[in-house]
Image (cartoon, rainbow, N blue to C red; front, side, top):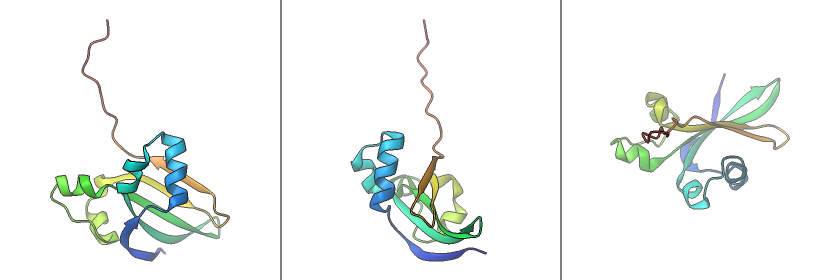
Length: 107
């Protein structure tokens, strides 16, 4: 069972932003725009916080409003990153963005 701790979208926690900046080489300005939804769940019997991270800018471009987990559940393609924070404060985030393909020919 998943219990939503923060049902409203909010800024990505600073520790997670720093982790993402280092892991994915993302600029702080971009990370500051992203929003996330958090929920509490069990990770091997220990409480963990699950994160779904999205861009409100991308949502607006698609004429969507995402404020709650229910909103994001209707538009799973808006999730750019998924991750969790374990009970010891360890952070893991995976990149779910679609790859950008270059149309330039290789010679």
